[in-house]
Amino acid sequence: SGRVPRSITKDLRQLSFTEFCRFSLSAEQTAALCWHRTAALFLQLDDAAAARSSAQMASDEEHHGQIFQALVEAVDDAGRLREGWDAGRLRARFAEVGPFYVARAHRADADTHPLGPGGRVVVVCADPGCAHEPACADAPPAALQTLLERLALPELLAARAAISDKPIRTLRVAIKSTFMRAYHRADPSVTTSTVLLAELVRLLQEHGCTDIALLESASIYDWHYHGRDVGAVAAYLGLELPGVRIVDVEEDLVEHRLRRGMAGDQVCATWRDADLRIAFGKLSTHPVDQVYLSVAQLEGLCPRADENVFLDRRTHRGPATMALLGDFPPHLGLLDAYEDVPDGLGGIIACPVPRTPRRLYGGLDTVAVDAVAARHVGLSHLEDLPNLEMAMHWFADPRSNTTVDGCDQPISDFRGACHNELSTILSFLAHPVYVLASGRGRLFAPEMDHDAFPGRQPTPWVLGVAQRVVRRLLGTRRPRAVG
Image (cartoon, rainbow, N blue to C red; front, top):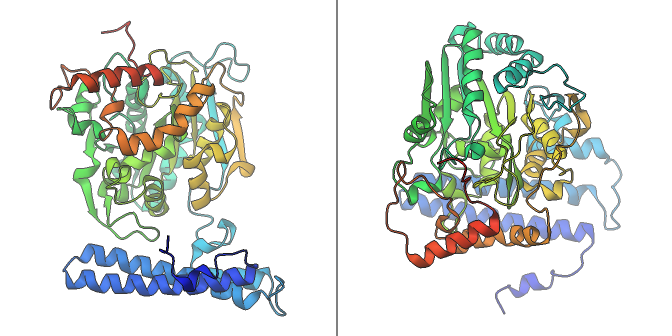
């Protein structure tokens, strides 16, 4: 169509590796010049934030150019290493550009960053038929107590206190769970169990912690319904726990320039400043990501999720989350798969018949925790798990260095997002339809508790019919046995 410059079209052919590196070096240098110019223009417009983002892009492009420059110097036209070059020298050149251009084992923070190293993942199972956990009490609080005992919570608190150089009683603890997807008390499947959250808080307080915050951010539901602020939903669910602060991430944002990526200039101050960060997710199926686990729910720490989803987005949600976790990772990952676990295509939205696997997962590496849980629901190939694949790309793949302490068997009768031909087709269509034609998510909204969350405007009858069709297709009608 003539939109590609002729100087470029001559190179759009099958290139040798060295030719590709030369072309890419030129492209990266051109991109860096463009972004430097863009930054200068934004400064003239007094838009400091946009200027910083553009300057960051220019810096990234320059780094990419340095990588290709090293490859041009190291590899000859036949695709072989030149004399004097080997993997070690090439790695050293990449490391000079930046630590993220070499594998985790060769990074300076390889032994300190908690995401990616693997280690022990504890799986507590209270299913009577599970041979691994025959003595586990069949109650969520008792199962969580067992999990945290085996994870050595007192030792973790002591270690974090030593690193922070303060007593345990003054440690700042931040818990990121998922409860803003709540839409009706009849369906607790879409939130981290309130019983488990209350028990986690009780155990932390029992071990001396006094500064505990529960973090969440508003969801797209507040575009269409009243009463959807974080405090109101927490109160609706009974999460106003003694001694716990409820923190709305959006109201707690402060300026911060992340070391890597284009996630913006703001982070949640409570999460940033916490001495112990805990990710407590809920096992849920997801039509795009296949499964939604502890790492994925941390996207709520970024400025408003809807700013990372729709066409007017500032960033893509995955890289925005990873950039944040690169600087401020969780120190403990927990996953609620005990009861009211949603499966099927639209489990993250609603689930009329949730499962009861009676399992809890936990570990110091949240990525490893999620990898084990994903395998237990039948998802072991990274191409099926875009969110988890991205985490492993940013940090490391922990699977070869992970050991499971406890039940290491698949969850029986768990229906994934692509459990049959129809759900697979709908899963394939879910993302473009949601982004382009959902009315900012309104088409996919569940059957809200209108007494607690009245609509901001009447629902047109055409939209109401479409919502009922979508709920039937996705299996996202709320349970009828309650309410």
